[in-house]
Amino acid sequence: MACLLLLGCCDKQALERCRAETLARLTLQDKPAVESRGLMRFDVRGIADADIAVDVVEASCVSGKNGAAEVRVDWKVAEPSVRGVRVRVGTGSNADKVWVETGPEGGGVTGPWIQDGSLIELRDSFGGGLLGEIRVVGLPCTGN
Image 1 (cartoon, rainbow, N blue to C red):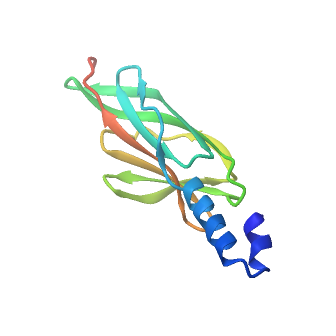
Image 2 (cartoon, rainbow, N blue to C red):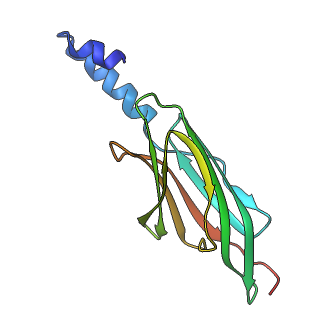
């Protein structure tokens, strides 16, 4: 809002300060890693105004290694410029499939396709900016 007011005036320094403050709010920051029942670790990064929670709902083990899991992801983005969130999933550095799209607050449970190396990205639905990401690290486990 402050940026919009500044656009109408000629104070270039104030406009640059506003841009810098906005950029700082929209820069990804490391959040505490989340370890879920010893099956997976989730390395979470997000903008300052994003709360991102993740946990395993159900997981399987194959030969002592994490197999696949259903994962619950919840988010709340309080950044005023964000009106919607598009969550994309994939592997490595390529989250190319849209999983869900909602308002700035939402959540859901994936299918049983999250595994070691999965990437979950939260992006601004309208501007496309990266709001958060979850990188999945499978941990050794015991079971069938």
